[in-house]
Image (cartoon, rainbow, N blue to C red; front, side, top):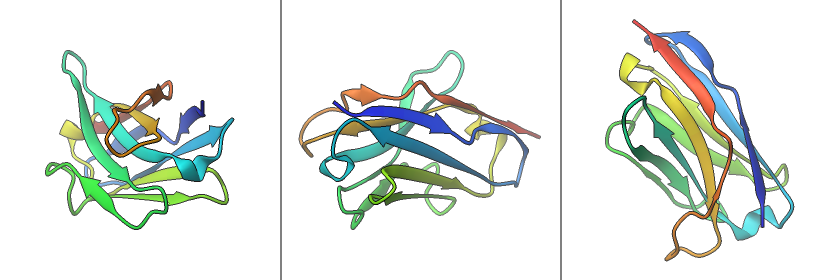
Length: 119
């Protein structure tokens, strides 16, 4: 199973940008579909974005469409989430996740990285 470690979170003002990274190890990274999720205090974990194994196709939650971009570098075993035009409501712990099959649920998770957007 792949292991995931997120980084890049922090405190940013509204309108600013952050880039999250998720480094994978342990298995062939290119065999995995990757996703980003987030969980705000007192709320459930929500889908943010996902990307196919080769990076050809991406999906986004409506709330982040046009502001966030997911990408991956299979040579570096890393998936990224570029977040622009950040809003206070984007404040959450962000998690990356992996799965091997398009029809399966995400079954491998990182430890999360905190993103705080001040108004």
